[in-house]
Image (cartoon, rainbow, N blue to C red; front, side, top):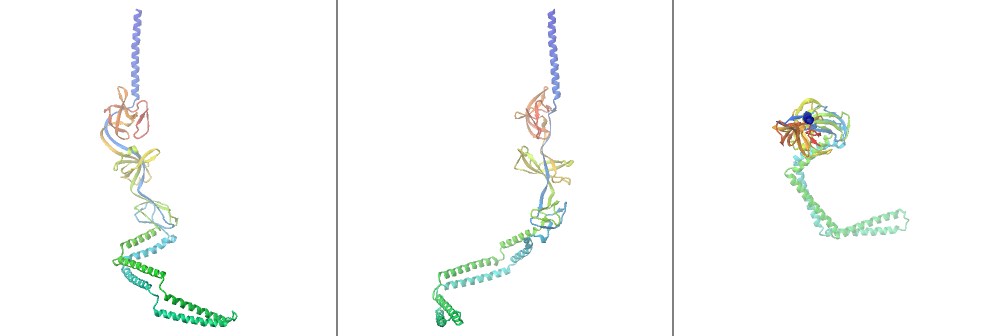
Length: 468
C-alpha cells in the first residue's frame, strides 16, 4: 500500500512538472512574440527615389572685373536692376586712362578710313598702275647701266679730253713747283713762301685728280662695279614683280583678305576702347555692386556680380551606387529649410559622366532645373532633393527596416509558428521606406520582423541592416 502511494506521488510530480514546463514555454513564447515588431507583407505601388542635398545656382553667373587701371567716372546700375547683354554698367574717366586707350580712339578713325578706301579703291588702283609703269622704267635703266659695264668706261673723245686736262694740270704743277723753289730759302713764316707752298699743294691735288680720272677712263669696269650693276638689275626686277602683283590685286577691286585685315584692326581697336567701360555679357540681374563713383580700380578689380535668374538650377552629389538609376528628364521634388511647408518641382537636366572621390566615397554631379521657382528661392540656398527614378504598380513590398545582410545575402525574418525564420530575398527598386521583392519565399500577408534578435543596424540609404 505504501508503495502505491509512492508511485502515485511520482506520477503526480511528473505531471505537475510537465504542466509547469509547458506553461513556462508558452509564457516564454508569448513574451518573445510580444517583443517582436512585425509588419505584414503586402502588394502595392512603389515610387523608387534617390535622395540628395545640393545648392541652388543661377543659370549663368559672372563677376565683372576691370581689365585696365583708372578712376570710375560713372555707374549706371544698382542691385536688383535687370540689364541686357551689351548694356554699359560703368565707365572710367577718360583723363585717368592709359595712353594706348586714349590713342585707340584716333587710331580707330584712321582704321575705319582705311577700310573705306579699300571698299572705294579707285585711287589705290591708279597709284598701283603708276607704280607699275615706274618700276618698268627703273628696270630698263638698270639694264642699260649693266650693259655699259661690258665696254670701256668712256668714248675716245672723252679720253682725249681727260688726257689734255692731265697735261695742263701737270704743267701747272711744274710751274708752281719752280716758283716755290724760288722762295724755299726764306723763313717758314714768310708770307711769300707760305703762298707759294699753298699754290703748289693745290696744283699737285689738281694734277692727281686729273691723272686718276684719266686712268679710270682708260680702264674697264672691275668685278665690284659689275656685281653692283647686276644687283641693281635684280632689285629692279623684284620691285617690278611687286608692282605687278599689287596691280593684279587692285585692278579688279580690293582683296577680301585686306578687307578682313582692316576689319580685324577695327575690332581690335574697339576692344581696346571697351577697356574703359564694363558691359553686361548676358541678360540678367545685378546681384552685387562692389564699387562707387570715384573709386580707383586696377586690372582684376571686381565691380559687379551678374546672375541670369531666368532659370534656377540645383547641383547635387549622388552616390555611385545610385548614379545609374538617374536619367535626364526624371522628375524630382525639392524642399528648403529656408522655405518651410512648401515643395517645388524640378527635373534632371544633366548627369555627370565622371565621378569625384571625396573622403573615400565616389560621388557624381547631377544638375536639376526648378520648374516652378519663385522669388523665395535664391541662389546659394540648400535644397533637399528627391529624384523619382521609377514608378511600379502592384508589386510585392517589404519594409526596408526588416531587411538584413547575412553572409553577403539579403534576408528578412518571417514569424512562422511563432518563431523568427530567415528567408533569403532579392530586391528590385527601392524607396525610402519599402523595397520591391523580386525573389524569395514570401507571400502577401507574411509577417516580417522589423526587429529580429541579435542584429545591429547601420546607417545608409535605404536603411538596411547587417546581421552580426
